[in-house]
Image (tube, rainbow, N blue to C red; front, side, top):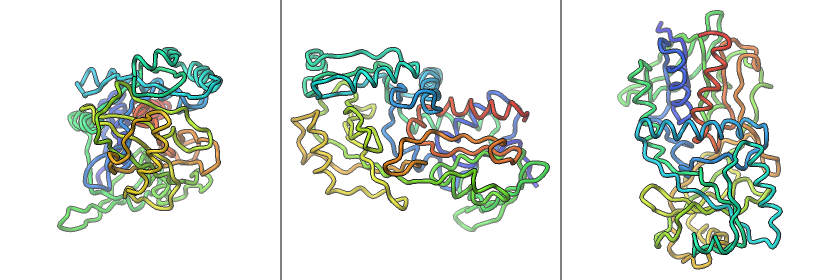
Amino acid sequence: MDRFDVCIAGAGVVGLAIAHRLLEAFPKASIVLTEQESDFGQHTSSRLSEVIHAGIYYASGSLKARLCVEGKVALYAFCDKYRVPYRRVGKLILSNSSCDQAITGLAHSAKSNGVDDLEYWTEDRIKIAEPAVRASHALFSPSTGILDSHQYMQTLLTLNEQRGMLYAPRTKITAVQPSGQGFCVKASINSRIKTEAYRFNAKWFINSAGLWSQQLAGKIENLPASSVPKQFLCKGEYFDYRGTNPFTHLIYPLPDPKLSGLGIHSTQDLRGQLRFGPDAEYVEEVDYRVTPDKHRAFARAIRNYFPSLEANKLVPAYAGIRPKINGPDEKPGDFIIAGPQDSGIPGLIQLFGIESPGLTASLSIGSYVSRLIGEVSL
């Protein structure tokens, strides 16, 4: 059978970044990256806001906070080095409250995470910078940006393949059997013409399957059920705005602690196309259809900070699914990056709950995994 040093399951942005960091740390490593779809990044990685986050919202000391702040720096450096298109547009987090206690609290939380470049803006300054915005005060984050996420993933894949990684799309893993020498991995390869069974060995097995991480974990023999957190699917829908984009920066409302996301905010692509979203709705299955009637609820939320919005210019765009490990009414969950010590299975690394800021943190997640492997040896 073919034998690899590492098998990474899941060619989303995180799987691609893990492979990149491993090949930097272990240039001679043989790595196979499997993907059940026909191409990389078909789910969570391509159905997001394409925002490079600063690291403001996450609990102090959490993996999300640490890896977002580290990842932001690494991602900007990567984009500069490999000419991945991006813009450091900055973002405003708005409040219309007469009291700025919530804004102050958010600023303190951000500072504890290592985000020390935030600016407090008064209403007058907001009016000068963003005349279409209504807010009494705001936090401005100059290090927030946007990027071409597809080009970023394509660049990672190209670099990885140039360094010897084997990329295996249309390859669905059906069983993972731990052994004294690592893992025997059974897979089904769909070549469009026929489906073939394929078996190979790997010393390390990394479960980075995103929405399917829990499902894949169920195919790993002798894995304790207690090492696999429950998954909750949280859908977020986006609407394009066919009117003129009046914003220079990204515009976010102050996050509502009772909601599962950051609130319906404005973002834009590198061409300046304005869109709003996502909302947050827990669902039972992966379904990417956008609900056209939601434009009314979107309009109500957006008019809190953009009063002149023309609701009839909101057009359904796309939807994404967040693979959360926290359910409704539960406090936000952290990233879970579980090493061999967590499962008791040598060579096994599993990632769960990699939602936002997973894109921003992707390279730092890759470094984290690389360190886990380096502690043992490849």
